[in-house]
Length: 240
Image 1 (cartoon, one colour):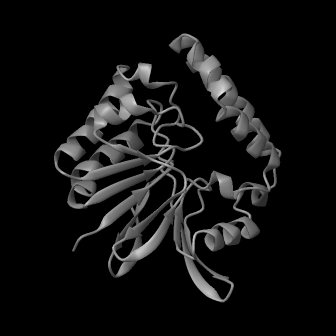
Image 2 (tube, helix red, strand yellow):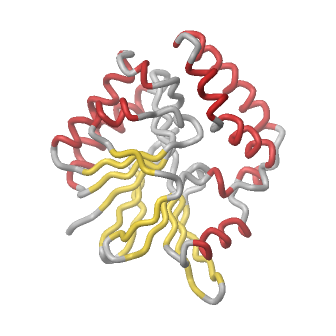
């Protein structure tokens, strides 16, 4: 049966070789059987710019996706909060299509909204302020003007600051804000919603203005990995 697969928050990095190999195996065995693979953000733990494509680790990752697209699988990549500097050179190297956040599509007959998920966490005010800064043209131009080595060092510093900040926050602050979810579902015509970011895989049903809306949260790949499989009959969560 024609079907699509969704993943997010893989956070691929050389420091986590087991999960990296799990992902490559997933591409060869599972994703290759699908019509489309949607990566909804944070494919990489960090991405300092497309001029780092020839780094050995990045080159292996992009070639694995290129092999998948050469098999005829449509690959769509959405920016996450770790890899928002992925650009058109990456798309050209892999054959993937970069998609916006959010993206609304007809998925096997069901209106479906795709998001990374970080914009749903509006109670995390400090993060939303940083996100606005990091997505600004001025910030990105200044960052990309630095040598690759300096960018990697800066990313390491930002990751340490982020981890310290997370320790001081209540867990619920870093989850989605219900009112924001309902507003997004209302704005887009009460679709099914698929997103990642929160690392809290689950299926939720929201009743918005009397209409039931399904929301799927994708798992992260820190320990095991998993994906969502959707076809004309609905969606099923699969853990690896």
